[in-house]
Image 1 (cartoon, rainbow, N blue to C red):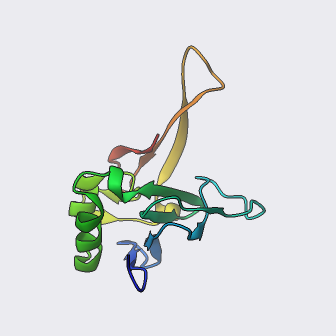
Image 2 (spheres, rainbow, N blue to C red; image 1 turned 135 degrees about the vertical axis):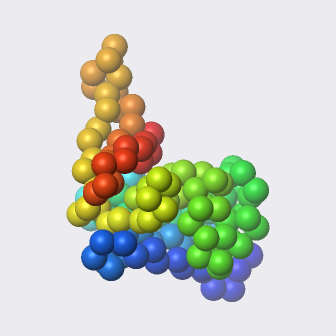
Image 3 (cartoon, rainbow, N blue to C red; image 1 turned 60 degrees about the vertical axis):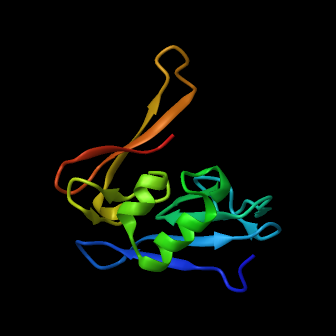
Length: 141
C-alpha cells in the first residue's frame, strides 16, 4: 500500500489546461465510479488498488491488478509521466491522448460522440472521439 496517492496531471497540448488527471487509489478509498458523474451521485468505495481517471466530465476507475503489468507498472509509468506506457497498459487510462499526434488534448479540443449497438439502440457501445488534428480513436467502452 502507498502512503500517499500518486497524482499525474496531463496538460492539453493546445491550451495548457488539465486534459486528464490520474490518481492511484487503495482499497477503501472513496471515489467516483460513474463515467459521467453528475455531481449529485455519492462516491463509492474502491475494492482494490486502482487508478481514478478524470478527463473533463468523464470519470472512470480501473483496478490496476487487472491491467497489463499490474499495479507496479502503472505506478512506475505515472511517476515517470509516461503517457505512452500508460496507453499500452490500458488505453482507457489516458482517454484524451492521441497516439498519432503523441499529444494530449483537453475535452474542449476533442469532438466526441456516443456509439450505440445497432441491434439494441438503447445499449451504449463506446465513446469515440476525434482530436483537433482529426485523428479518431475509441475513448472508452
